[in-house]
Every structure is written in C-alpha cells, then in structure tokens.
Amino acid sequence: MTVLRQELESAEPERRFGSGWISGVLALVLAGLGLGAVLCLRYPEVLTVPEARNLYNVALIRLAVQVVLVGGFLLGILSIVLRRNKILGFTALGCILIATALGGSGAQDRLQLQSDVYLGLDWFLLNLIFTGIVFIPIERLLGKKEQPIFRYEWREDLLYFLISSLLVQVLTFLSLAPSLTILSHTDWGGLRRAVGSQPVILQFLEIMLLTDLVQYWVHRAFHRVSFLWKFHAIHHSAQSMDWLASSRMHLFEIVILRGSTVIPMYVLGFTESALYAYIVFVYFLAAFVHANLRVPLGWIDRWLVTPRFHHWHHGIEHEAIDVNFAVHFPFLDWLFGTYHLPADGRWPSGYGIEDHPIPRGFLRQFLYPLTPAREAVPVAFPPSEGNPVAASPPDQNS
Ligand SMILES: [Zn+2]
Ligand SMILES: [Zn+2]
Image 1 (cartoon, rainbow, N blue to C red):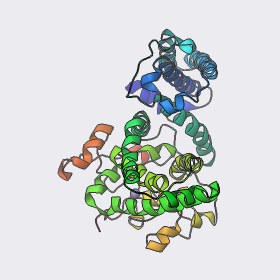
Image 2: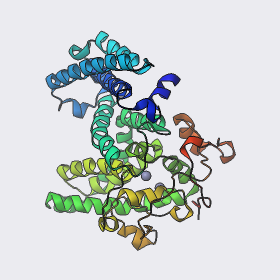
Image 3: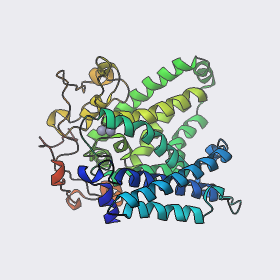
C-alpha cells in the first residue's frame, strides 16, 4: 500500500506525460469505480440507496460498467508497458479481475435480501464521479496554487468522503429526526400551504436566506463553544484546500449542520422541487467554496460566498480567526461584524490551525473531541510542503 501511495503521490518528473503515471492513475480510478459498480449490481439491497435504486437505468449502467472495465484494463496495460514501477497498472488489473470474477457488467444480485440497513456505495460513486469530473479539470486549469491531485492528506479527505456517503442512511435519519418531531407537534398547515404555493425560484431564494441565517449562528457556535469547537476543528485541520477538503467533517457536525438546514426547509412547507434544487446546489457549492480556484469574480465576492471568501475562513493567519461564517451571503458576516475580505485581493498564506494540534487519521479524529486536550497528538507538517508561518493561536473561545 505504501508503494502504491508513493506512486500516486509522485513528484513532477515521475508523473510527466509518457511516464505511464496518467494512464496508471486513470486505470486505477476506472478499476475502482468499476469494482464499486459491480458490487452495487451484485448486492443492491445492502449497498445502494432505495430511493435512488428506482431511478437507475440498469441496462445503461451495465453498458457503462463494461466500458469502464475495458477502458481500465487497456489503460492498465499501457501503464505497465510505459512505467518502470508497475504497481499502478497491476493494482488496476487486480481490481478489474475481482470485478470480473464477481460477474462484471453482467453481475446479478444473488438473493432478494430484505435489508433494513444499507450503505450508500452508489451514492459515493455518483458523488465522486460528478464532483471529480467537474472540479479536477477546472482546478488544473484555474488552480490558485500549484497543488497535485494527490496532495497532503488526500487519503484522509477521501475516507471522509467515503464514510459520510456510505452512512447516508443513518446520517439522514439523525438529521431528519428533529424536523419530524417538530412537524408532529405543530399545526402550521396554513403557513406551510402559503410557503409551498410560491414560485419555486422564490422558495429557493428564501431557503438560501433562511438556512444561511441559521447556519451562520450554528457555525459561529461551533467556533465559540469549546466543546463544539473540538468537533469543528476537524474541518479546520485541513492544510490543503481543494474540492475534496469540503468532505473533512466530523460525523457529529454533519448531523447538526444537515439537521439545522433541513429544519427550516422541511418544517415550513417548501415544495420538494425547491428542496431538491437547493440540496443539489449546496452540494456543489460546498465543493466550490473549498476548491483550489483563483476565479476572477470581481464584485461577486462581496455578495455571494466564493472560494476566496471561504478560504479566508480557513486561513492560518491571525486576521482569519473567527471570520466569514456565512455559507451563501457575505452580508450576514458584515451585519454581525465578522466579515473579512482584504481589499487588496490577497488570499491566506496557508490553512489549518496553529501548531496543527489535530491527530492524523479518521478514527483518532473521530475520538478527538472526546479526548482531553493533553492527549492530542501534535502533527508535524511535511517539510516538502512548506508550512506557512502561523500567527497567533486561534481564539475559539473568545
Ligand atoms: Zn468554521
Ligand atoms: Zn470549510
């Protein structure tokens, strides 16, 4: 595994065009996606989301799996031919072999298992495909700073992406539970009908404003209350910013954030089309504001949350502490005195928390909020990445 990781994280000369690195990485990605899709075809009851299952065109998916596996196989062979170290190519071929042994694109679910519990493997694969297809190429073209795809801590962030997608059932249940309780104890039929009868675009804008207002204060509480900060610190421990960094979040915080978004949307009676439009929008927005993008957005920076606005929220400098809490509208920060966007167009010089006190690894980070501070394991920044000079300590409790 270490050799495979080192190959993926190869520095520039070793990943140049013609070195077999690009074909090897593509082969590995296609093999992973193909194997995941074959597992979903074979064990749909336990690995796919029931609501999404009914929407799939299985014949089209089988064709796509076929193309992906054949493409991955050919690229794997190409990488083996071109590259001195064969591990990328052989690992890809190994995954394709397992996928084929499980039935390949023709894999049938063996039993009609009745399962009350499922993992969202399909959800993970779709998320990864769509956000990856959108953000990886534009980050290559418009990257704010030179940063490889397999940058520092990419595996941790990918694991966060995987686990939060797989646990879609339990996270959705926990997030929805408070709204369902509120709904069962209230009788806002008139208000709900009035809200739901508005044009969808108006409902969409109202959802943006309401959720931003709620999340501004929830987010601010996560910074100011020391118990909550230990959960939120996981998100702020990201030292590299890109589309994948948005998924670095403690499961407890995911439930609280989703719950606080869903409550105003769900309880007030917004229609399903407005809700789904907002959920898709906010999903891409989360990746966008974390992305490594230097997009010249001019005056838009001041009216809508952009990568530069949110990067300042993650900045390591003293001036970046406890600023820019809004998710959609920077005017909320301006209104509540936490707005920070330097007029000279500067970006933060680095990201993370001073001294990087958060331990490495998903499990240790999961337990970190419940661990006494003295037991936290400090983490050293890799010298090759050049950790920018940190300023004063974060004053989360002030
Ligand atoms: Zn924050
Ligand atoms: Zn963030």
